[in-house]
Amino acid sequence: MVFVASTDGQLVPRDVKLGSRFDDYVEVLEGLSPGERVVTSANFLVDSESKLQAAESMMGMMGAIGMGDWKMESARPMEMGGQAGPGQEERRVGDVMVAVSVAAGPAKVGENAIRVHVRDASGAPVKGAAVSFSYTMDMPGMSIEQARAQERGDGMYEGSARFTMAGPWGLVVEIERPGKPPAREKFTLRVSG
Image (cartoon, rainbow, N blue to C red; front, top):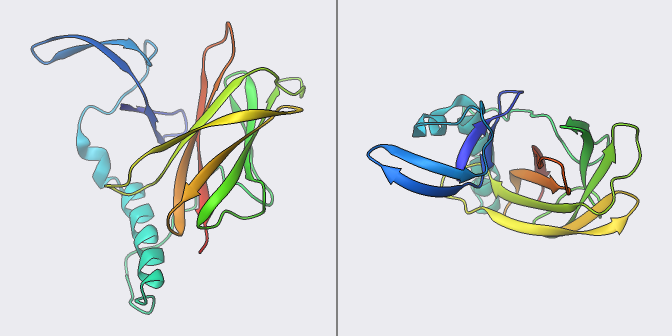
């Protein structure tokens, strides 16, 4: 896995297939396109966005274990684009428009049905795509879970995600269609307890 810098400055995880190795060089067979910018060191872990999101996640966890009255003076939640739920944002990703929502209202700890709505540039529903998503809490040490979404009709695809704690979760949607490059975008879901 590598992290690719998106056009809006966010870091998006990307699965890659590696080939031959020679000294400090590694051949990438699949998963990247020429000209994409990738992270070449672990410095992104100390990026202020990562620290703020981790602080917000930690505050949610502290509340869950009875330490919610402790103050973390420098920690403020960072608002990111792609908030799903009421007033969800639809984003252009390549040649499609994508929106993410939770089927039963706001995301909560436990199982959630995640809906991915996909339209083409003219507004028509995209049918017959392979839609999947990966999700993790944006803090070091959290595992990345993956799910495949099933087509439900009218450009809507649905899959299941299990959120283990409250806080911000990064959800990366990938859409594959025959003869088209994969479309990939990161959204942030706020999960409540």
